[in-house]
Length: 214
Image (tube, rainbow, N blue to C red):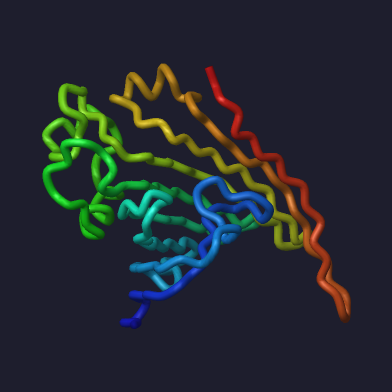
């Protein structure tokens, strides 16, 4: 369903988040299509040379022990039309659900959707109902924060990009500064397309690192 540039979609879908073409840290179409609820912009809003868009995705499913869990994520991007064309992207995603002890209420799709708008730092979540008792505000959910920068050179038809992601939840800004590289993964890549009358050819090189940091 679409109203102007806003859309609501439901169905079995595949998703690819990130600038890479061989790897995606957050979400890739290497997994089977899954039941998906998608809300947001169908095309980017444009203001002069700047365009931007955002989508909220929720995928409900059962894990291997038949527990109801949810993937929920927010995907955003800002594009500046220049030479090179500059794209900045930010993704935030969670795996959440009914999988911890002493859970007083059933976790719902609506609860999962609201996670992507919660504060970034653990100490800002102290008063929320789902934080770990006795902790400084940490929750049970697996979170991934991801940002990327992509440069497209139209004359050469070349993309350069870097994507950095972390699955750690920092307690506060001081914790982030002290341990900015904790559980950090990244993708660095370049690709070039060439065309002739019959064929389109893609040359690419991509480096993925998911090494455990100290």
